[in-house]
Image (cartoon, rainbow, N blue to C red):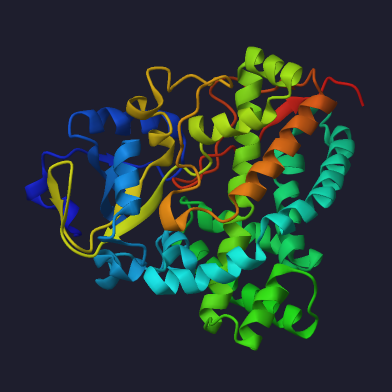
Length: 420
């Protein structure tokens, strides 16, 4: 077993993460409470019997992600090297990729550079008219998706289609392939899948990416995939075939799955806090609502953050080289040591301190601007069009995405009850 399971660490509590994601915030609160007794260090159980470290305070997550003694490369993880992380483990698709997310040093700079030089603020701004038109079309269609009882599922018909269309158009994915991409992305974030389902998805991902690259190489467009292929052909960037495919994969996955969750979580937060919704409508504070949701209910619940390249000390405990350290973003978003005594309160007027929803340091998410722009536009447009919209779910509903990674809703049933 990986060393966090050894008797030497028996005094550090183990909290097994629920692969069904049934209660992210309750689990996050338990992680914070356990960390209070240990200086912010706990152990967590993952599928397949794996045990890894987790740091439960904002300060320690920042320390870990900024430390020069930490690697992002999954091949550094002892459990990967020994085969304890098996190919059929449901977390494998979120771990074993070769792109800027899992690269260190010069490799990270090499793989990140073409993204930052092509995925620019200007390109994002140029997308906004198309995003606005898509938002309007989806809002027009919402009443037609109502069930006989008048309920509309916003995730299925609004939160998911918008980021999917945006990222597919940005990367030149043929429209006929959008449902296939959505299935693959949904599958790798889920952690309740069977070994057979994992194997099928992991086999189809490289096929999907190979076909996308072939299509765009044969018929280049003004999309990011074509730009990356051209940059590689011109020698302005160096990527192996696997690195190109996996770079596209991280853009396609992180580029829309997390935004789906962000839009949905912001909608849920505002529906659950009528006074905050009234403030957002009265003073156009929807950007603040998105920012507060990123902190208060991040759409990434947990993520394997780093692997020490040498023994390191965290909260007075020596963490051996090759262990894995998880960042529980849902937990640290409400860390009272960083966000104050009211960290559990959703408050648009909060004096915001930096949050970690997009990471930190050299690996901070390059698509954060687009995600926030989309979410703000989507949420503002929805509540402006349907200001009398009400939730059609209770406090314990709706059901979540079955994932320990994604903190998001699998459905958002509402009654629009507003003007057409």
